[in-house]
Length: 358
Image (cartoon, rainbow, N blue to C red):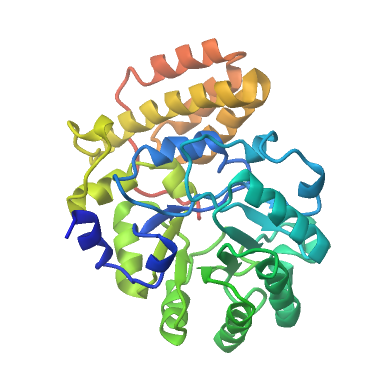
């Protein structure tokens, strides 16, 4: 038995039939889960490991009229596997046409967003607004599953507008009966947005109540959080957003902890563990990320992508505010790289936790 197969036995097998064999994946995030971040995170995945990879949230009303693969949100690299774009919508024709285009593009699964709490999504009655109408939400899933043979997942928030678990259970059961392959639960209500703590007990209760896979999401900032969520909830897969964006080497740490085979570039190195080691690795990732942003997005959009990434993830750095200021002042990628190299010449400390919620 290979080390990866041995590792697989440490978490649930319900996702194995879909080819998922590693317990941590990246969450879809607007403005972040584009090609540059996916490629940076992917380099830390152990050999033979497969997890679903998200896109940014894609509006199904726009996709049919776009050149999929030629927009910043749908750029992809040849080496990217198991791409699972996330769509937002509630119109059957738009969903069907969007999925058709995404299949041609290379999607290996479709994720439906029922967790977006922003006003624009609520206004059009999609995102977390769908959680107020279980039948309507189930119909949206059915629209998707009848349009494709690919697995369809749903990412949602805790009980949507209620803390009543029975409502959540009934809601999720309806999604599964409509064809959803698995559910990702972010146990924080729409009203909370990013405030307060994620209630992992809801993931545990849901996991114990249903037979289909449940993915846990919320407040994953370190590899220890991944292990704790697995232990406390029994979830089939852990999903991390900004935490994994800031610490993509969590995949490396987990592979090292399990004795899994690493990509050649990592084999003669040990995963960063100390605050200083993590600070240095963040700097290396940031330089690579900036190069990829320049390559795929060009100078203007690329710089904006880098600045947004820094604003989002540098909160874990002791002097992250200085890094934000340097990125804002950089007028082009040459200046940005010089500023980054100067900043990381001095050892940087990366904190394990921040008040920023996931």
